[in-house]
Length: 353
Image (cartoon, rainbow, N blue to C red; front, side, top):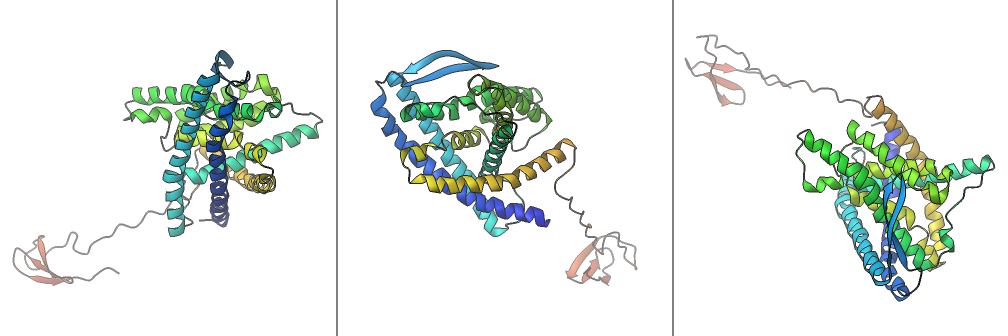
């Protein structure tokens, strides 16, 4: 393994530790948020939009009051379950593997969750910086002006619902149908992704779903948001295809819920500022690394050097003939002696070093 790849593995490990702390804090506040939002059920703006995605979001209806709270509680359960899955089936195997062989380069869902989170944050900051360089001030939907409970409702809803209307509908369903038509053996759960690798068919629908995801944000954010949300959509789609919808939900939740702990308590501002700075710096490295991997993928090259084929072990008794009778059937007398079963002649053999 090259020095660059070893550096990536070490940085990935450090990032995973920071992500572990980060995720546990977010999940803790997510569970607390159920208690926090409950008293506001009777408020006029306690509402959650239900829509379909047809290029742009098409509103169907609003969930209000108790129905919105029940839906919100279900979303919290889904995100919490996604967090458990990514920690149990992603973090534990990754750490076990890392401490046994830290530089084998294997991918794990939790490891890549940290990498692509940092990558996405770096790229988003980079786009905003470039926009300001050309004297363009990016507009936002102003969600920060909403009451905190309303922000929580909308952000948690987006973390799960956008994965359903974008990744499941425009990525999961088409892939499942195409793979089934090709005769591939599938589990019913594969409709939610988790195929283990990205092939050419998956890559096409990843791009389609990312474009739709980007267009869906234009009405609220304006056209500047197309670039970062397209890249973010590709990252989410990648996790969806490779590991499953629980991984894309967790990444989406980590992106959207970032500001909430700081809104609850200023004590987190310094901690999260340090987190963000670390993610941006690490994200630069992962952006370069994943860009390189993408280039190799689309050019048909492999990232790792192919292992040299091992020389086949040739046993000294292959094609051996008895010097006495010409027989070719032998029996071991000991590790260095063979006996011809035709005439009984014993033959000494040399062990290959």
